[in-house]
Image (cartoon, rainbow, N blue to C red):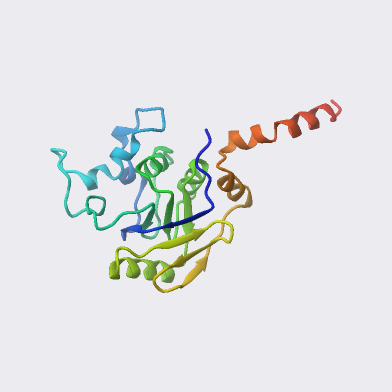
Length: 198
């Protein structure tokens, strides 16, 4: 299934300065029964967003209209715990297209890259600057440039580069998942098969 291509994203951000956010907090296990990648955004951070009677918790950031945007900024070690793909699905379905942290769990990072969410790993110092910029002005925008592999804080002009696997970068730029990539080079594969002796 193809996803929106990612090139340059300029957006405000939602701050979640909590370390060691695991996948069960991102999407609790009781919501994993569905097999289609839709509807998971409704239950993103479900137990942090809602009380037992389904009323919103006013002190949780996703229930605070002051903070909006397509970028989620998390604390160190974001996406740890179980390998459930649904955590990345929930992030995407809610509307986030980029998650920033100073460290990601590998499986969560790869699950994000497979569905069109860009995980941007920055230094702890730059992450602190991002949180400070949001705290000072919630309307601060950030520009994530996948081509140049850097992120810039609009209010200060400060920027930092980030790493990404070349294959995953190309897929993100084209809006491909792994199946889309193979479909795109189908003729090359067929040509190789025809010209390769058994």
